Structures are given as C-alpha cells and as structure tokens.
Image (cartoon, rainbow, N blue to C red; front, side):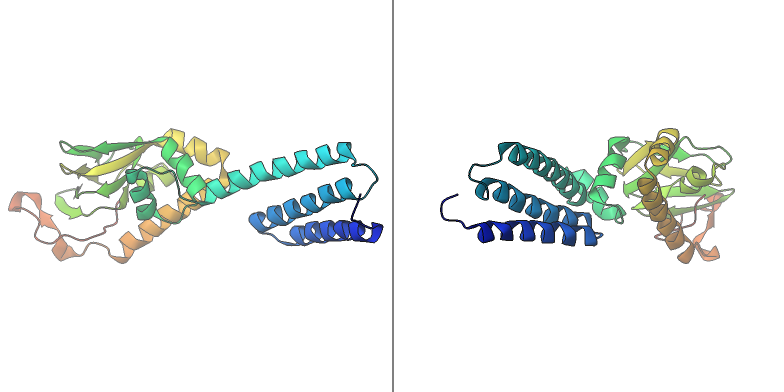
Length: 241
C-alpha cells in the first residue's frame, strides 16, 4: 500500500502478537480481552496495508473475532458494574454487599420485594420455612418458646433452614411498615446448583450474616417473657435458625 514499506507493516504483526501473548498472561478477564482485541486491530491493519491489495477474507474473519470479543467485553463489564438498577435494587445491593452485580441481578430476578402494610409472619417455630427472607427495612419480632425479642433491618431470616433444611427454631414476624425481599427456597437452591459461583458467593454472604448474629448474640437481659410486657432492650442482631 502507498506510504508503507514492508518493514513498516511487519511491525504490525509484531505488535499484534505481543498484545495477544501479553493478554494470555493475565488472569483478569477484562485485561485479557482488551489486549486480545488490540492485537486483533493490529492484525486487521496488517491485512489491509501489507499486501498490494487488502486481504479481505482475513479482514472479515478477524473482524468477526473482534466483534465477538467486544460483545464478551460488554457482557463482562455489565456483570461487574452496578448500573441499571432501580432504587430498591440499589439499596438491597448496598445492604447485602459481597456480590458482583451480575450475580446480584440473577438473585433479584427470582426474588420478590414486599412492603408490610400489616405484620408478616415469615417463619414458624418447629416448621420448615419454604422461603428465605432478607429484611431490608423494619423491625422483626422473634419468639423462641416463651421469650421474645426484636432485631433491626438488613438481616436474613430463615437462613439456617435454607442452608441445612432443618425446621425453624423461632417464629419471626415483620412489623408493619417494613420492607422485605423473599425467595422461594427450592427455586433459589436450583439456581445456586446451576451457578456454583453464585452459590459460593451467596453462601459466603449468609455465613457473614450468621457470624455477625453470633458475635452480637442475644444476652439474657435482652429477653423478656411475653406475658410480662414489651421488650425493653433491642439488639441489632440475634442468632436465628
């Protein structure tokens, strides 16, 4: 091509090869794809400028590879950047933490948001709950035997039963005016089974919630026998099965 010597265009091959080799040395998907894409651009430039006439077949082939890489990049970025969320999804994302945006979107897609215009019974002591709950806002009354106490928002309810399949060791009721997100346990388990990365991240999230509850466990003086009147002390977190 006019304005380029053979040696000049050969540099494009060296650059393309260097970019793609460097890309495969990185474990980070984003960097790998960007460097491979840059290498593809150099290859396309070589096929266009090096021969007397552009090698269109090679250009089309490399362009398709580059296009597929761009689509993969868009999907990758979308899965890692928390944009396009509604207000309550953003609040839930911030409250839960620890999940990549892509995993979080999968989780939200099978969940339901609800506002308690009246008290909502979430678990019953001695019964296996069919749902897993996350209290986004509001107070939850917890009853274990003859004892009763309250916990505040941003906690999972029914997480032990979800992980182990045991019955609930406490009855829980979300007070009027609260906001919860609920998941059908069987459907959630099915999703986690299909997506091991989501299962690991979600179970780690629940484990942190459990650890926080154990660390700030309910003290004896925080409990009141229900017949003796209302609770005087409210703990932020409490261990709930």
